Image (cartoon, rainbow, N blue to C red; front, side, top):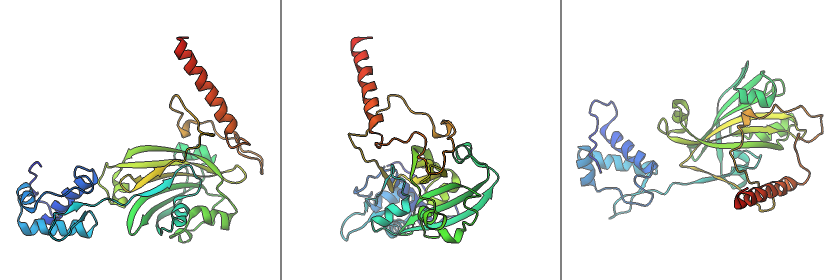
Length: 302
């Protein structure tokens, strides 16, 4: 490995600098999970520090779960715990984790009224009178996701931050406000962590995060929420259930959710516009036919 002496003008202790450098390499898999770390002698030469500093750094990494050590063997990079989320389900992270027996903790950072929000939220909720809710979700005291949710202020005027500590927003909507999250659309993209979100998630600035965003409708087809949820890509895996009867094939990238036509306000009790009585089966069949026609055209050079 390339020599990387510590910065002796840095206010951080030398062992913290060494631990941070090694933790970053474990996180970005420069040191793959299960691989042995360099020997103490190699680390001393690389960082230009004493044996005691190296040993303190390794002890810190072990305490944080970044490495595993067995007597008589070199420390190895720990295999990270991954948490799986089914992204096509309307149910939120809290309910999915609870169903798996995991205890998801929620810290409410803020809940405040906003005169307006991002265009995507205003577009989906069809109002500029909004509540902005910011939370951090954790498992075993390790932050997994940072969630920003926009809600119609008039509908949730009685919502209080204390109600949401270690609780499910969707369950609270249903029990207290009579609003059942029933449908919606989601998008996933990889984004760099901005400084604030990086700090809350305990990751370096700019590290790749998985952003899940979208809007939800209630049981009457009325817009219920718009959310943006940043997940640590080294801890959270997004799962998608595939069913051959309902898969949809898209040849070109679809439009952004924010660019979709503004939703009409359906009459109470009516399903959301575009809802299909057979769970999308008819649409899937139509798309398959379109794809088959396109492939035939390409094969014949038409």
